[in-house]
Structures are given as structure tokens and as C-alpha cells.
Length: 98
Image 1: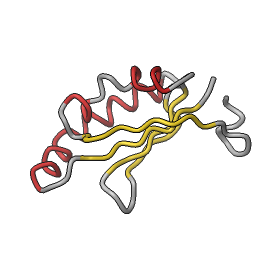
Image 2: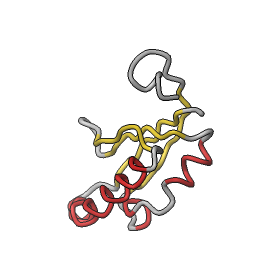
Image 3: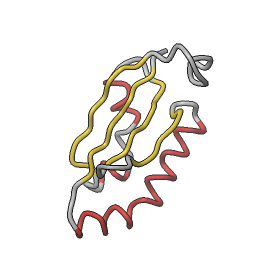
Image 4: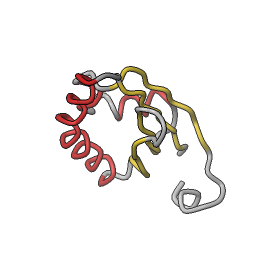
């Protein structure tokens, strides 16, 4: 099984920030379900741009996208753009799990 790096780019502006703050608890609850299922390795906000990175265990971009289909950040319009790239960890804590 491969790892997919998912990048969320958030909508910007004051209204978008309010929406993000409102939806964040449901988004994190959703991500915890993926973590509990073994599909999420890590996630968190980007430091210098409005967005986030997620590491998902999925065979390809389509499967990763399907895992995230019900993420409240996506369904509520918090995310403006999603990018998915495959990644093969060979050293480090995730290498042993894949």
C-alpha cells in the first residue's frame, strides 16, 4: 500500500476564516475516524500558507480522494483546492507501517 500526500489549500478572507473555525471541530472528528481506521498517518495545518497536509494510506490519488469525500472541510467549502501526490517512505516511522 502506498502513502498519498494530500494538500488542502483553504479559501482566504475573513469570512472563510470564520467558516474554517466553525467547521474545524467536525473536520477533526472526521480525521480521527480515519486515524482510528488506519487510513490517516498524520495531518496538520501548514505554517506559512492557509492550508494543511495529510498523509493517507491509499493505493492511489483516487482512493485518497474517496477517503476524504465526507470531510466537512470539503463538504462545507472550506477548501479551495486539493492536491494529491504519491509518496513512498523508506526511512522513518511511516516506512515500517507500509
